[in-house]
Amino acid sequence: MLGGWKGGERMVKVKIPESHPRRESLLYRDKIVEGLDEGIVSKEGLIAHGRGEAFDYLLGEKTVEEALDAEKAGVAAMLLGRSSAISVNGNTAALAPEKLIELSELLDAPLEVNLFYKSEERVERIIAHLKKHGASRVLGRKGDAKLPIESERAKVDSDGIYRADVVLVALEDGDRTEALEKMGKSVVAIDLNPLSRTAQKAAISIIDELSRALDNMIDMARFMRDLSADELNSVLESYDNDRILKSTLEKIAKGLMMLGLESR
Ligand code: ATP
Ligand code: MG
Image 1 (cartoon, rainbow, N blue to C red):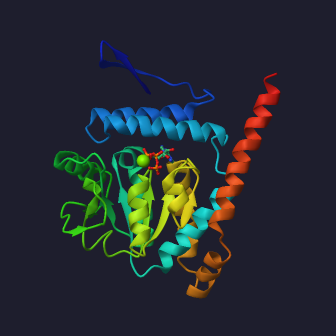
Image 2: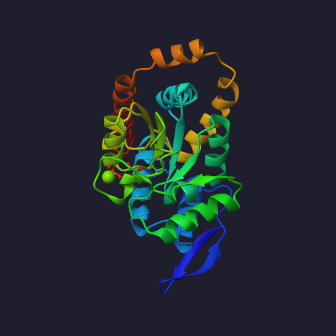
């Protein structure tokens, strides 16, 4: 069902046909708007989502091979890490709460709410939302440790992101990714824009839509959990993030060329 608006208020739920070519994309959009109505997503989050949609369009709204490699490397890094954590913001909580919870359980990586546009109320709403979807424990209330950045995002929990040596971030701001990497942590980022600072600074950049990326990582984590440290290390050793970023950008550029030719 899709939202409809009248006079600034959400009036109706419009059913989106099964056959609609952009069905998935419209359903995600609806989840974001619902998240806004529930006080989980910030207004700025709507804009960030739109930027993501544009890049997904250019990638054909599917997981490219490069993203699969990055997802596999990301899971390996999180399994090998001494301690890992998953950073959650309003958009990620609204789009894929169950998937975040499942991956967190499979990888033994706590979920921690960390917001750029932070208010205590929104943190509480996101924690409640995740708990409603089955999370047993969500960090992000304490904020008893500090990252070397200037925004509200500096405050983190000592037993979550601060302690972790591998942090999964999604739909993230570049500043914090940079700060986490500078602290010696390894950042695994899910971000559809290969040119964003987040994607450029992360150790492992997953250029894929959040829900698709999490689904793939959940599948991978199920069997990779049983791999030995040597096997996981060899996944990481053969991974080259610069090559992945370059190859994804080439794919987008080639796709644009083809579209340009087709529309003549
Ligand atoms: P940066 O600060 O890293 O340079 P930015 O300022 O361009 O990034 P932000 O608003 O800080 O963007 O972060 C949002 C990022 O999340 C954008 O790069 C956007 O493309 C991406 N994004 C939005 N929605 C999704 C989604 N559903 N799946 C994956 N990525 C997404
Ligand atoms: Mg930014």
